[in-house]
Amino acid sequence: MDRKSKLIFLIFLILSAFVGVTLFSKFYILRDYTLKGEVSCNPEFEICFERPCLEECDEESTATFYKIQSVHASDLILCDPHIQECPEVNCEAIDSCVEELCTAENVPEGETCSSPDNFMKETSEDEEELPLTEENSDNMGE
View 1 (cartoon, one colour):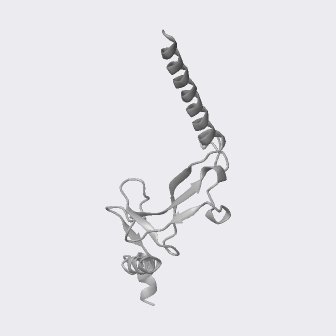
View 2 (cartoon, one colour):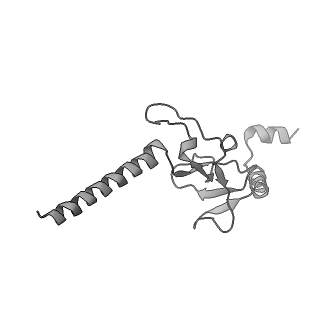
View 3 (tube, rainbow, N blue to C red):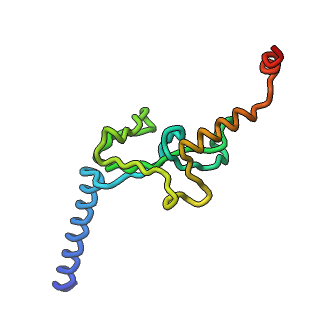
């Protein structure tokens, strides 16, 4: 190799090492990135995303209710869910945490928004439609 090729190779090697150290520092030491995930949402009190159940719901519910949380990684406690039970993120205790509730602009295709008013109406309608059981029918005759 001539002198010019060695110099170019050395510059490339130094730049590659600099980029590697910078990325390692950013992601592993400073944890300078945002995590975004779905968390459970109570449709009685919040406007939630409502996803129809495919397989993961229990027999009683027909939908999954969730909201989206975004939080800066450096504000979270390091935790490995394979080794231990990790605490749930509490947005009220973290300044960088943002909760995204359902709106007409951000609802994914195939899903809907569930508001507390609609949820209460739906649950009261479901309770009215329950079939009479032997216990209920005995009480009605009295």
